[in-house]
Length: 241
Image (cartoon, rainbow, N blue to C red; front, side):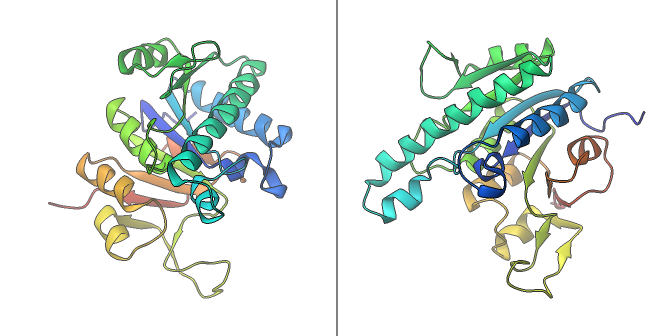
C-alpha cells in the first residue's frame, strides 16, 4: 500500500454533493459512499478534518436574491451545514469511524464549540473532526471556512471534492472545448478568475502556502489517491516567490 503524502488534510465537501442526483436534501447512499471514502483515508493514519457546505438545504446568497436579508440568509445557511455535519457524523460512525462535530456557533446540545487545540487533539486520537456553521459570521463562504480552518489546524493540503474532475479554463458544462489544468498556482487561479474558490479563500491559501487539490468525488477512490499523492484532478500549488 502506498504511503500517504500528507499527514493531516482538510476535506471540503459541497452541500450539493450530499444531495446526490437531485442536488437537494440528503441522499443516504451518497452519504455512505463518502463515509467509506473517508474511512479508507483514516486507515492510512492520516488526520482528517472536514468542512461541509449547506447548499443542498439552503444557500444564503440565493435567499438574499429572493428577498431574505443577506445576513439572515447566511445564518440559515450555517444551520444547514450543521444538519449535513450531523448526517455525516452518523454515517461515519456507522462505518466504525469515530468523529466529532464542532460548530462555529455554539449549540452544545448537539455539538462541541470549535476549539482549535481540541480539534487537533481529536485528530491526534484518530477522530475525524467535522467543522460546521462556517466561520460563524455572515458574508463568508464555506470555501473561506476551509482555508481558515486548514491554516488553524496545520493541514498540509485542502482536498476540494466536487462533481467536476478538476479546474477548467471555462465551464466544461457549457463549453465542450474547455481545457482542464493539471497544475496551476494560486495567483494564476485568482488572476484568471477561475471559479475554484472565492478570492478570499484563494488568498488565504496563497498566503499560508496551502495547496489545493480539486477532484471529482463521484469516482470511487479519488480521495485516497489524492492523499497518496497520485495524479488526480487539478493541483493548485504554491507559486515561486
